[in-house]
Image (cartoon, rainbow, N blue to C red):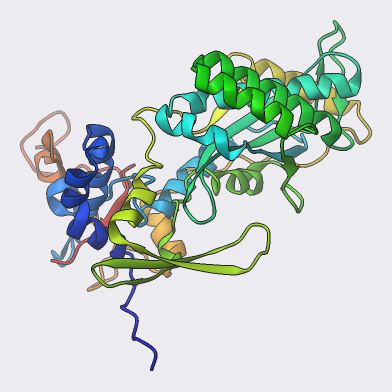
Length: 424
């Protein structure tokens, strides 16, 4: 007889942490720090009224709706979708008009992963050296120096949620020459015979320089002999979408996807957690049942230091030069027959109201009683108190130039905050 599984919902992850987080911190004190506790507490408080809310009121029938703020954390499975949307909007506005992009993944030997676990700030160095290597490889391929553009994402989780730091790089499929005429050179194919050796050289050199211990030097010397043909660098299968929303969403799924998504949870019985993943090599479904402490450890090890920049821009995409490069590429594309192709689309920011409409087919700010649009009444912030009160916006305006009567000043229609409904 098959044992009945417990029902899994979006709240399951929060329940796992509510039940076990304090015990986990006592057992593994290295995680009892603000870096980890703040991320977990934000997730646990997501959608609670005491952590901030907005109220809307129908000015026709008086019905009120309370909308609690969400935590906006990448660690929260409930906020994952809106977190993805925000990054899609941001990245899509940074892409170049008509430029083709390629998605390259750079991995590292298992022996080196521990150094990035001990010091997660090394992931920033990893991202920088990844771009530097790609630019060097393309310059060697073209037999002249070129400047490329890269959007680099350090990722720390493998398919099963284990610690497996690697890089996802969305790079321009070519680059600008550094000569006075600034020509565009398009990459016809990825020169993997160059990449493997280059990545080995740049990665080993960076680790050896940054760690500087005898242990690290010994590891590096051993790995040089162990990998005579270089390290793994591969191109993601399938076409990378050209520009705009498609490319941005393609990249962002590697940034904000939680180590173990709620859709992959199978069972939680208070002591153990069961989940599944798709194996990268075999493409088969694999399952694991872990003790709850091990599962929590597998999740929280991927929480990065506060303020860590998850998406990094280099070369042509660097903040200081992106505007000039965009103008230059626009001029170059007019004279090219096929070197630069594709389209570019800036994605407008989608607010809470739009996301609810898309997900559930309902307008959350339409009164359910009389179907009229509701007005923003109040905004409450846990730190600053009430920061907006619609009733205080009443002004006297009996006749032009006086303030003797009452009129309602219409508040702004949308609040640029993430929210979710709470039941009264």
